[in-house]
Image (cartoon, rainbow, N blue to C red; front, side, top):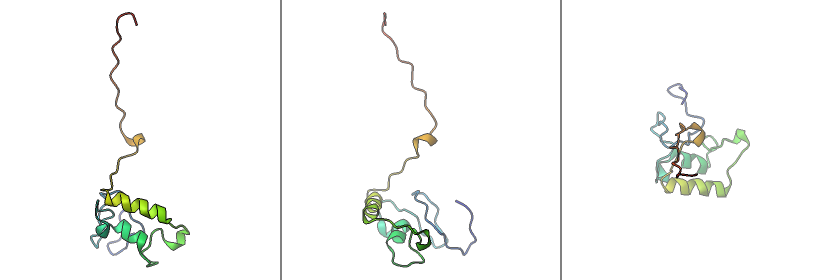
Length: 100
């Protein structure tokens, strides 16, 4: 995460559940706890200075998208790296029977 001035408010919340907290101690996602998850607070607030995505982005989340994020956080917010960023593992060479 890029460094910000000490008193600056973050303009967005990282979706990674181990995201660092901001100066207020807010954690982006607390697996299993909506009330402690800044992501959920930001997408459900009516405060135009806090809501994500911000109004100037001219984008909104649908009710279905919000419900999906809600369930994901409630279920523990499992997260895996994209397969393209994982180190490849060479499988063992199969053993062939005689005559194959």
